[in-house]
Image (tube, rainbow, N blue to C red; front, side, top):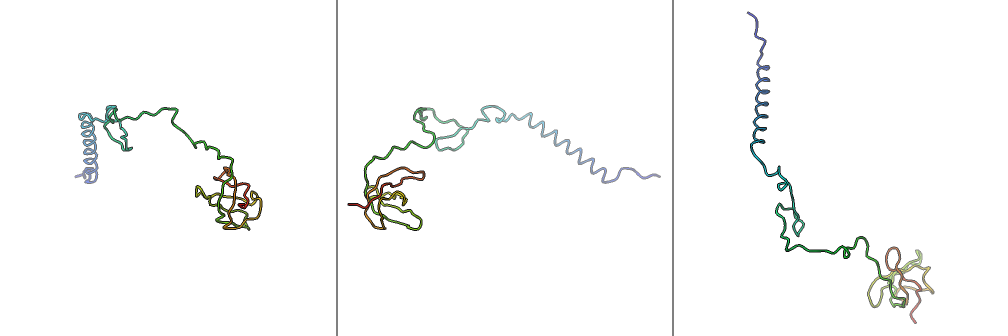
Length: 149
């Protein structure tokens, strides 16, 4: 008598294939039968609350803040030019080799940069000086620096 052409492995593979098809059909039917809320537009909407957290509930319109378009500033705010008067301060750091230093302003306590090209006479650390302010590329700079008289 001839041997059967169906082996155990072939039967096992066929059974697995049939189970996979049935699972696929069952899942498809479940998806069709169960109407999920995610299929509608309302189910897909997300809202931001006042703290920046994502929620599924819209915020109360009475709490809403109104901003005028003219008040919104994009970019760096424009700087107001400093008055053209002499200021007074003390030299806190001075590097003769590199040609720059810093002045501590007496009134505002700001630290102002100066370059040796902008000094009118020789100055050293702890000297009392008078100077004018200009806005440089990296902040405030002192020009026309002289010893206080």
